Image (cartoon, rainbow, N blue to C red; front, side, top):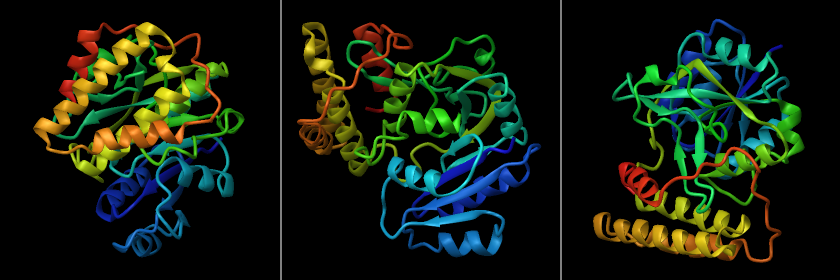
Amino acid sequence: MIPTAYIPTFNGRERLRQTLLSIQGQTRECQVVVVDNASDDGTPDMVRAEFPDCLLHELKSNRGFGTALNEAISASGEGPVLILNNDVVLEPDFVEQAMAVFERGAPVVCGVLVQSTAPGLIDSAGVVADRRTLMAFDYLEGRPVEDISGAKTPLGATGGAALYDRGAFNAVGGFDPEIFAYYEDLDLALRMRSAGYAPVLAPLARATHLRSSTLGGRSAAKYALTGWSRGYLIRRYGVLNSLGGLIRTVIAEIVICVGQLVIDRTANGIRGRIRGWNAAKGLPQKPLPATGLTDFSFRAAIRARVRRYL
């Protein structure tokens, strides 16, 4: 069984080159589809010239992360669906290790990303989320790589290194097309869990990740997108329906947005949340899964968010 890797990219030619080179050196065969979101930095020409074995799915406009992937996945490729960011460099046995877990019956496989600036530390081993506020965090972020051994299963896979059974991915509808970028992996994880597709961690499927290389870790543009997704998901999953969820979520969002205003001098996070909330108006509420969510203390959740520089 040969998996197909789908890599969405936008003006990331040099980063993408390193990702594709790392795929070329894999110990197990993998088809590759580069999903180009109308880059104007020569990305398509580079792929055609240097990686002729890759399929190139070119879009006429920037469709974001999930929508671009949905289109490419439905248009080409077969076998398990491997989602990779364009800023990851895979260990030579990444595909082999992920497929070994998949072939034992896992419908979702969570790869492990390590930090580019500190390779001994985990960047993300999946996504976890608070049951009451739906605040999401990278699983085991900042922990030594050795801690992955014997770690519990997260809520779902991170969008930067995830392997899905194609039938399961299609059964839940793929990524939510309303979400342009950020937290689309959280939404997919919630729907996968609700449909009974529990993930399995692949501790030896590892890759180095250069985080937030497209927009920057604390840019106003990123805050606008993360804010939109946050407002949208809060409404779609009925987070504010309970008194406890309402109080904790409102306080947390105020803390985060005030931090962005004071430290980074941008209100884009606030405006994004308002737009995302409004975009979810009238849409059916999605159910939260019965398993996989975590009970974070309010202090722990805020502390984790602060570590990510808001």
